[in-house]
Image 1 (cartoon, helix red, strand yellow):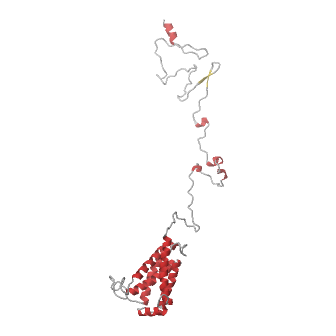
Image 2 (cartoon, helix red, strand yellow):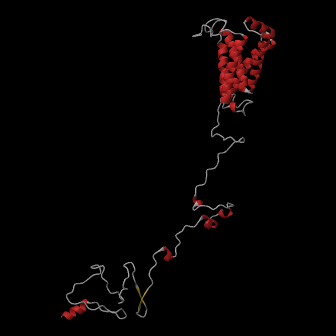
Image 3 (tube, helix red, strand yellow):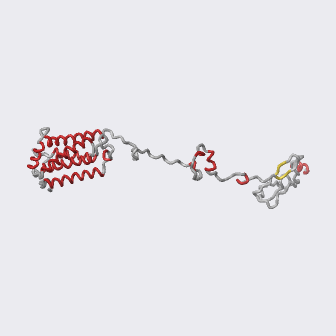
Length: 314
């Protein structure tokens, strides 16, 4: 009875397989390789394991057609055993594979992954004179307004200059203006009158054309400031709206000429290629200061006195 149970509990050996394991004694519990990991068990082919082999070296067998077994080679595990190259190829080595890269005339070695770098930004477009073109150059009606301003200022001074020089438009003429200036306390009228006429005519024409605008408008500012100081000094107190001695018109012309110096003549002028035509800065500011200084020095030398007597702290 025991022999039959033993024979039925053991698997039968198949013809052509390896030598069967010895029969397990009756009553012995079934053992598993996981019960003692360090214990060595016989291989399936009946070949004992190689003594001293580590746990990472596994020896496998391959069944041959004749029923014999033979150990195979160790499986490859590293990149070298697999025949792989861990190094990344350089750009110079793969340049021929990139379209258009083979025609490059650069002889310097390219760094690794240079073909994947971000190209530099294109340069900003420049004007013909080398200056960078601004993104927005729209000026709207600004140039038209500056043209109208120049025509008003220049026409006004040309009108008064022709009155003094030729007597047109019911003007006093050259002799009449000399007499009026002498009666008004001016000295050296033979020099002062021609200077006044040249300033009004020359400055007015240049301002209307938009040519040498900072200098021309500065000359007009000096002339009208002297006229303002002369009329203001005829009587004590502020003479802005005084009857027969008002400086209202002169005050307006002083403001207009100052605005023209500081804003420039605009693009509709002969100065359109000059920096002060649309973006006046140091040059125009210097012209304004020089005009004020010239007016004060001329008044002190050719007339004298204090024109601001009775005005505030003066």
